[in-house]
Length: 465
Image (cartoon, rainbow, N blue to C red):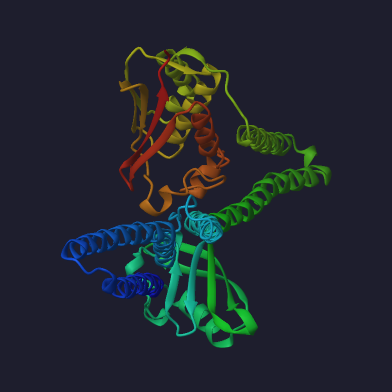
């Protein structure tokens, strides 16, 4: 029994024993007054009845004492024990003896407060966990012993690691790039914040990370370890390089015709115009360079338009077979000039698109096929249905494209064979325009190529309803 129960029951039994002793004394004092046997029998009967009455009265009083005082205390004690175990949903009975009601109420108020505090803490922990797991940056925390105490999914996915391979492991043993390991070592040893841009190779691809590291300081300026945050800037670096290449290429492409125009104009001014044959030759060159400059400017403007956010095409049901046949007519002079063969396998299909833009797409692909193919080669165009798409294949027997160049094929000004494309008047913007126009039609474009054997450009366009 609990101490309180023991004290209460002890006091009850002492009181009962005192009562019974008192009765016994009274009985023994009255016993000499009874002389006859009949009176003696009656005396003992009355004594027994008195003892029984006293016993039942005492039992009733004891039961009442236990019910009124012991049961609420037991309930409060059990509730307190549940709270100690962490069960903050436990509650004590408040409909009990008047003396225990304040204690029960206080216990219940404490339980509600603990439950609310726990709920808030769990909610904050869940929010923090969700934030760490879903943040767009990698995160690891290293304790003062140099062991990983926390990592998020981004960090694990970046280096193809599992949580069990990180938590509790020494940071120097992690299978991570050497540049990142050196950065962590520097922050851990110096205990000072640092920020760097790191680069490393994954197969044939180059990756770039912006990494920030800082010490974790607790109460009373206690050093608890370090935290490392990393963000993938590979795409930003790629776009920055494309921007630099674009500026350099535009400058180069503009400089070439401008230099020619300036040079031939100065020559004519210096007196070459007096020779009629020289004059006509120079004027033809000036016209050619002017047309080249005009075409470059037009394609730059066109690329700027299709790259703008929110650019849309006027999509209408269009006869794709008629579009391809019209594009073939426009490039027919180039095909005849190189004595090339053109094969077509066209199914009658209707797509949802802008007919003028679709002609522009086909003309660019056919012009590339002609420019990068030798004379007397064959170009094959196919149109067929695949699920809910119209598929257009443009296959040539040209110089082909290497696997390292395929991922850069649709960049602005990128050329597989720079000398050939410049001689043919190409600007290097055609495929960039094609890619944006295809995507504006909610389609996609793919390329398969073998160096020396040719290339196949495949376009998927949604069919009209």
